[in-house]
Length: 631
Image (cartoon, rainbow, N blue to C red):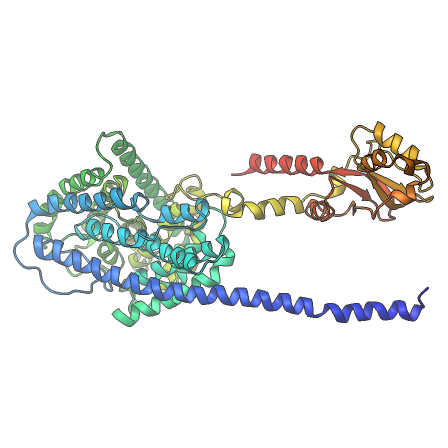
């Protein structure tokens, strides 16, 4: 027997022996995190270079096709243009009418023949790859997506470049993850980091891009463990972009937008108006998608049909509005992303009329942009919906702000502030990314003066557009995502206690340690459901278990039944406390390789037997309840 001194010394020695284990685990965890961050930097560099090339190629295509060839002058935001210069030749409306169809036709052929997953905006494909394809995208995706988007957008397709760059960047992250032979979870993180890097390279809001990439995957959740890698990749990509093109913001804006508490009711009304316009936009786009789907044409030809309808819609308006405002060939943001239209909604322009005429102009461009984007994206054109959504929000906010200024005769109302708030509210509401859009607008504005109005409007739009979404691949929460199926199982099992499911009233067979072996064998053979039989001491505590396999041993050596007792036949008990959760109980089942566990109370006395079928049944019941309350 050991002395008290020995009993006190032993835990101390055990404690010393165990201390390296947590340190080793911490070191391994640190190495894993460091590896992911290093990979994120690599993704940021690659996505930044590719994003910069894509941006320059797209600007060049727009310059040569729209500006030089047709005489069309895209209305540009301050930081949008790379190639500057006046257009050559007169404005050619007939060419503007057919050029979007030709570009969309080339884009449709590329996507249909080489990579069908690159069809459309790109954000949905990125979201679907995360949830359903273990973060995998094919190696051809970046090239095909870039070329298709360049032809579609460079020829005047009404869409943004950010959606394509999200898919391009995400594909780069996926490709690098496969090359480095990382696991599925880390590959998904690199996919998200790549999407953030791609967005950051062209939109120039590094923090907002990182938040968007982790938030856009779910309607009511976000990928927290991908946030830091996404921020790192986004910052690196943004740095690569400004190395080539210089530091600038996308929009010119006033130095400050002072917050006036008395204007909060106006901002609340703006949120409702924006939600209404966003609903109209979504329904228009879905109507176009449905109509195009019904038309019996090859899938590669459908984007060209949308481009032809786009040209037929926009060309007469350009011919009508251009001479009226002495701007022949001026695009008014109807083709392309339309950031120039958002720019005039924020800051105005020297040629822009004043008063109600300005409101009318913004509303005409707003209505045209809704239809133009729906025709391009809804027909399967390779164009994003992020940029047009921001433009639609800015036009709505700009028109609302100017109307409020005229109606209330309040010079403190700044239409630019309402345009910026409308921009964030529109996209934040329909994409279910309120935090990301809020931060993006603050980055675009250069200050947090609009933080309170943005928070109010984002909250209202989030509720108003609760059941509408721009991205059909989104899932509500991690619970619905196949990417988190393993985590869901663990969370569900940990939420259930053994005491909640063990059947205490079910009779079971137990033995005294002195019970003759022959009696043990006889009673086990007569038992119908039990495989594990507890051996109890005189005070009712579990001291061992006898497995039903003892019947086989008794059949092979019948002479043992007359000599042994239960104590000789028992093994170390596989037991679990009634306070343990099912995750721990399942671990004990697997460690002991048994189908049943003895459930004990705080005193070590048995209260019942837990079967593996009980665990399975409890899990299925819990998941069915979760599905029943899921939004």
